[in-house]
Image (cartoon, rainbow, N blue to C red; front, side, top):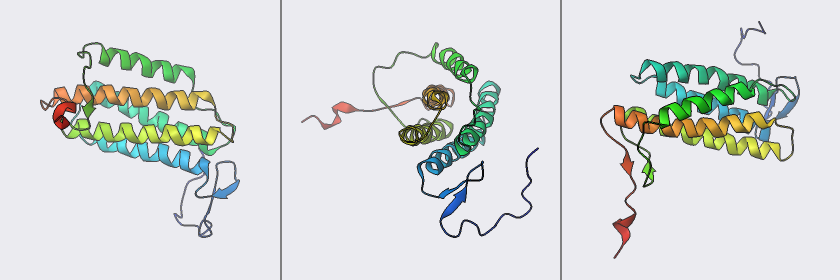
Length: 184
């Protein structure tokens, strides 16, 4: 096991820099820190979702995702490190297909909402989308494995479908965007 944190503050970041997993010091607002920091934020939002009363299958899936997101944060924090593999993405796709299959086809856009669990799931989805954008931005000038970007893309899709499932399970239903409301 790696180093244990016995002291939380070190004062080494007081100058606006932080240490990557390989020991390199970078600015706290660097593209790499933004990418793995947003992955961490998304993971926290999934934790907030897990604080809701959820079906055991969804709970197990999201707990697995949290571990994978921690792995992904490590991958992004350590240049050249690989943690997310094709099998992780394939598993997301299988879950996505199984949760999406019984849902009715979408005919309208859905607004974030539909009960507390669904709303939290939508929030997690949007943060994952931002993590994806930050990771793509990082990939413009630093090496990022394509698996990292694909994982985030599939995860945001899965969270969208899970939000639909949770809105229905909670009895609130999906909140549809009323595009005709502005017609005169």
